[in-house]
Image (cartoon, rainbow, N blue to C red):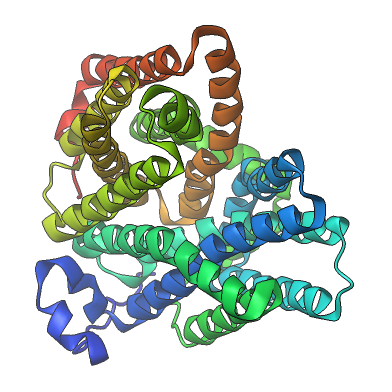
Length: 426
């Protein structure tokens, strides 16, 4: 049984924007609510990263524990993303999204009360960080797999690009907001604001209509299947589908060998480029600006029907820019290369997301996106690998190796799977 086409409207307060190619997917009211929820939850997640680190350092004065709390918050993405995709396919993506946002609000409120009362201890920060990471692992596959439910196929590239835009805008702005709040109302006040943000996001999500019409027999079959068997079925589906398997390799291998390059930026800022913490901030800012511009470009281009070619070229450019940054002795050039890495990284990632959503069967989309979001769990492991290699061969040679590895994977795919070059939206 087919679902009805997503309903268009004037765009509400976004009416002037929906007339432009960049924001056209906002004419679909349910996607607009999903997008607003993405804006607030992304901001909350980036604010949490800053606030949690500040709180841990206040409590311990330990750089080691500062790194540990970041790792504990990130690693659940590696262990729970695939299961989260299974749950999204079995029990409903909207419910899963609402539940995760409510839990996030509760965690932030709990930590705020502990800080304000003066009872907070380091184990509270670790425990809530672990739970927040698990919740994030369940939230992302549900949110991403809903995009194709809420817009027609031709609007999926624009919708994915818009989601990436707001995520990267949050990455640039939310840490600064967290810093202002910590200075003005302390850590507890920052967590109260984050709890309110997740509450607002939940209100928007509740208003969404899930347009999927489920076949009763399929629902019963999925419900009778164990979580383990559903997980295996999803993994087998990805592996047996040549297109999805190859696109996934292009996402996951650079996540391990390429994207953790930013973990070595302090080494470049202090010891190689000699620009100190201010220069490091400029380098990170260039990555964020480039990522936002890349997402805006993808959203504006929309359905080019050449997603495969763009994905491959952008992935190749990403590898080459990481290599060139490792070899660059000049700060100005390094800033430009960081901006280029942000553009190319987001461009190939969003195109890959679009292709996976388009080519995955609706009943498997949650599991496919769950595997896709392993990329965020692999990055901390890649950072450990990069740090270990840098101690042996130095940071410049490490990034040169990482960049060339990513480029080599892309070139292998270019020649081994030429059909990907012509891959587009159906």
